Length: 143
Image 1 (cartoon, rainbow, N blue to C red):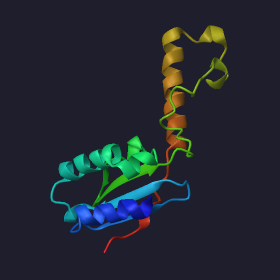
Image 2 (cartoon, rainbow, N blue to C red; image 1 turned 90 degrees about the vertical axis):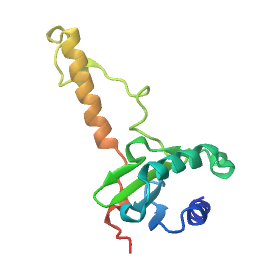
Image 3 (cartoon, one colour; image 1 turned 45 degrees about the vertical axis):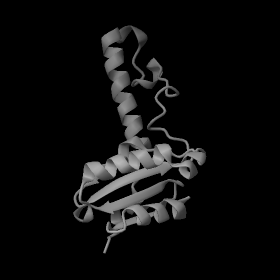
Image 4 (cartoon, rainbow, N blue to C red; image 1 turned 90 degrees about the horizontal axis):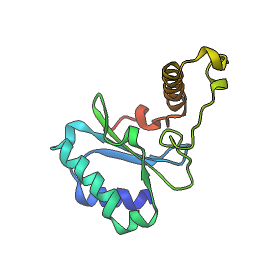
């Protein structure tokens, strides 16, 4: 799949510098050099279209990693995809449940409904940050 995406990108965007590969979590990372991109919104639209309409990619049922989909940092732009066998904690809001025992072991009586919701949201944000995929291609320079 990585080779197919690379070949497609080289065919359609041959003047852009990028690296593509898999990380230890089996996710596909694509890192673009922003100074070689004529239109960042154009590339973003292309990537959205590629992941949703290319028959070969659709057949692999790749999912985009929302946090790293069009993520810009300094001089690079990142896109990350995950195959179906990779469990995504960040996007798995429905399956993450919280009980009052998780919230600093406070007694049920000491938490008002609004206080409980606020603490639950903070706990979820903390867990989501801990489970966020790591961007391994950050340390790779593009020549």
